[in-house]
Length: 145
Image 1 (cartoon, rainbow, N blue to C red):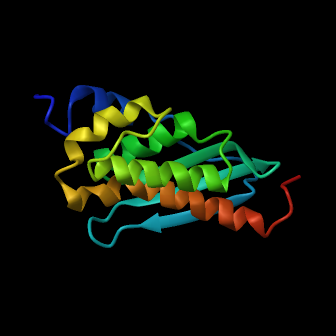
Image 2 (cartoon, rainbow, N blue to C red):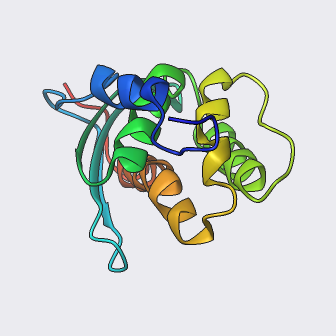
């Protein structure tokens, strides 16, 4: 596979590693997001402490890009608050559009071959949207006991 191939081995390895895959006992918030265009579906669960993600888990039924993006989020999502997560999502979206890669997300380099495939950007962003939804869901609830 060439470096321009979006499905290079390093991306496959990231998706297979599945950082954060699974479920959380007694999550504070949960959200399901799906893409009607490609059929990807992501359920994200979150636990918050002091407004920051203390634990997350995801279940992805989708393409390799969506799985790898969820795994990347599993590596970097803990410690973020909602504003930090929204900024990270914006940075990933900008990076996919050809801008600077977001700082602190070295795995993003694996997604650079997806830049010209605008129809696949949503696959990469869907886990971010699901985690934002899970944080929003947790915002109106008392912490889990």
